[in-house]
Length: 165
Image 1 (tube, rainbow, N blue to C red):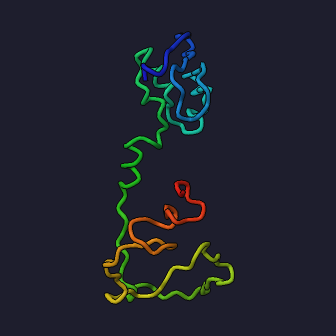
Image 2: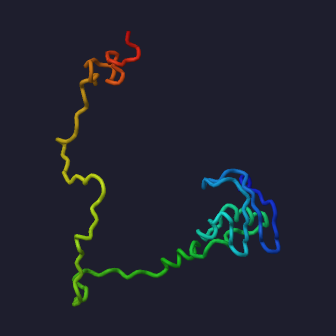
Image 3: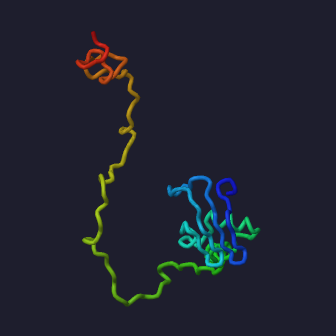
């Protein structure tokens, strides 16, 4: 980060920084100078607000004042939150014979609402050993003169051949 960014101006009391980019960012926007406000969790690039995760400008500003940038990571992205999701055990699903009898309405899908997949339909044919191709024992030949060693594009007998006398 230190090679590609530089903190130009900072207001330590309000945690406002001006970060200058020294290298073109991968997001295809031009090199520039961006304002970072750590108290408001704001960066001019917009990544900090959208992703709720520190962008490179915030990380440089934090390292400039020796702060841990992880305190600006949204709580949902922390390992503890991920562990909390999987903390509860899910009960095992019993066999269908043990399910209680259901007397509600029966739902059926409407096949007319199904979208046809785009492109060529997938083949349902089952291939066997008969479908495997043998290696070609005959060398490839030119489509025009039927000689070996070149293709139709490089044929010396072609009408518009460049090196023909």
